[in-house]
Image (tube, rainbow, N blue to C red; front, side, top):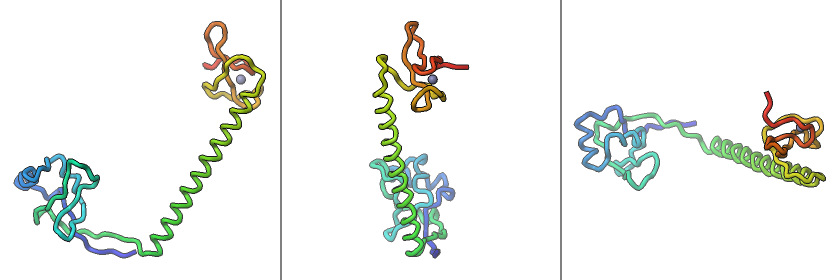
Amino acid sequence: MTQKEVKVFDLYSVTKEDEKYYEELGIPTYCLDEYHNQIVKKDGTVKPKYSSKVLKNIKPLENNITTKVKWELDSTEGETLSMLKNSVKKSKDLYDSCKRKYERYEHLLVGSLPIEDKIFEGERHKCNLSPIGRCMYKEDASGEYECVFCGEPEERK
Ligand SMILES: [Zn+2]
């Protein structure tokens, strides 16, 4: 890693007097933290952290600029990190896709049961009599939900 000195906008150095300057630029005081620690560009301006249509780049007063150290990855470090990040993303995509397949197949299996009632998945309870290991519910005559396999109600103590 390498470090270099950069100039940044320092919110904590802004005085009441300075606030007036920024207000005249159209930046209300409560928005100034949007510029805190933002790096001063070559043209002397800083941009807000989150680009928005409301806040524009401003030129900070000299006494609101301070020098800080910026740490940067060298190219090998940067590539390694982004490669690893990429594999995390790929694994996550694969996980999501497998999970969808798993759930779809489970749904298919439940749908193929010779049960006339409309059944649905509610509160998750372990069920020894269910082909998927969990209770599936239907509405009984009194409007309560009970498991079509074990007959237990959805709401349990
Ligand atoms: Zn059950």
